[in-house]
Length: 559
Image 1 (cartoon, rainbow, N blue to C red):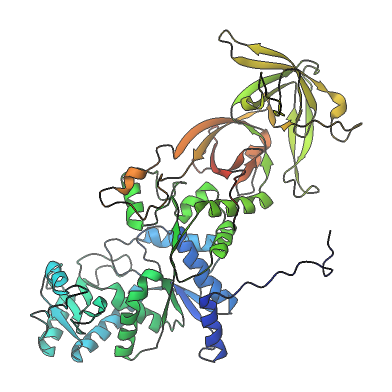
Image 2 (image 1 turned 60 degrees about the vertical axis):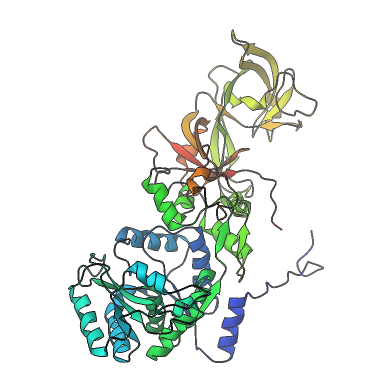
C-alpha cells in the first residue's frame, strides 16, 4: 500500500470546459461580481435525462463560482401546460440535490412583455399580420430564396396599435391575427424574417387564468426574461444556437440588460428517446404505465427504477460539456449506477428459480441465526439476521447433474459453501415422474461454520434462503424500451413505435430472506449474485414488488 505523499500517483486536475473558461474569464475581467444562471423548463411534461445534464450544468456552475440559479418556468403555451408538471419539475430538481434562488415564471412578465411589444409597434419595429399560418410560412421563403413581405407589413403605427389592443381585448378568434417583428425578409438567417411575437389563444392559463388571450412566443420571451432577471450566462442546448442572434436583437432593440446565451451539446443516449412529445404519446396510448414507468427516460421513471441522483451526477460529470453533439452509450449510465449502488446498497439473498435442498443430518426444528453484513465494504458496519434451517432453496442454475470440469457450484457428490454459513455435500438427487430434479438431499459439515474451528475452503459459494422463513416477492425485470441503438436516425417511412422492445418488461417471482422486507434504506438493494432492485410503490400488503435497477456485472468499462 502506497503511503499518501510517498510516490503516490498525482491526479491531474480536470481541464476546464468551455463554459467554465468563459465564466472564469468574465469574472477575472470584472465583467460580473457574481454569476446568475437559470434553468427554464416548459411545464408541458416531465423532466428527462437530458434535463438532468442541463440541471447539473446550470446549478453546478453557479455553485462552483458562488453564484445563483433561478428556476423559471417557460409557461407561454397554456394549452399544453399544467401545475402537475410544475410540481413534478420542482420535485425532480430537489431530488437531484439542487435548490434555486428564485422561483419565476415567464407569465410573471406578461405585462412587461406586452408593454415592450407596444413599444416596438410605436417604433415601427412590429406589425399585425392577418395572413394564415400557411401563408406566413410560405412567405418566409427558403435558405436559397428570400421571403416575401406580408401585404400587411406597412400598416400605420396607429392601425397596428389599435388592432393589437383589440387582440388583447379578445376581439379576434384564434389564428385570425398575429403580431410580427419587422426585421428583414431577405435575411440569410431565417429567424430574422419577421418572426411572430404574439399569437391569439383563447385558453385559460394555469397561473393567470383568463386575463390573457394573446400569448408571447418563445423567441420573443426568452431573452427578455433573462434580461429582467439579469441572468449573466444563459445556458441552453445546441439547437438554440441559430436563435441566439434573434435573442441578442430583441435585447439590443429594447435597450435592456444584455444577458447573453451560450450553447452546449444536448444529451443523446443509445436506445433512448427524449422527445417530450413522443414520451407523452407513449403515456397517452398506454404503451407505458405512465410518466414514471421505470422504462421511461424521465427523472421520475429512472428514480422509480432505482437510479440515484448521485449516479446521474457521476454520469453527467463523465460525459462532460462540449459544443459537438455525440451519442452516449447507455451502458456508461448503467455503469455509473452500479458504481454508486455497489458502494452504498444493502445486500440480501433472493432465490428466483428455487430448487429445494434438504440437509439430512440437520437436527429437526433447529434454527440458527447468522449475523451477516449489510454491505461487505463495511465489515464492521450494520448486519442483518439470516435464519438457517434444515430445508433450503437454492437457485436451480446453481446445480448441474452432469457438470463440466470448471463448474464450481453444486453437483452430485460435490461440495459448495452456502454463503455466510456451512459447506454442504450433495448426496442424492430426487426427480419427479418426468425426470425433473425436484430436490437435493445433502449433508452439512458443522466444522465449517465461519469463525469456528479450522477453515476449509471450496471453490464455489452460492446464495440460498430458508424454506420456512422465505418471503414471496414479485420481481419486475426491465430492459431497454427500444430495440434500435440510434433512435434519432429512424427512416422517414418508419414509426418510432415500430422499435419498441416487446420484452422490455417481464415479471417473475422470488423467495427472499425476511430481512429484505424490513429494509428502510430508501435506495436500491443488491440481490446477491444477481443485480440491484428497488421496492416499487405498487406494493401492497403481501404483494411486495421489486423493480430491477440494473444487473450486477457487465463487460462494459468506461474509457
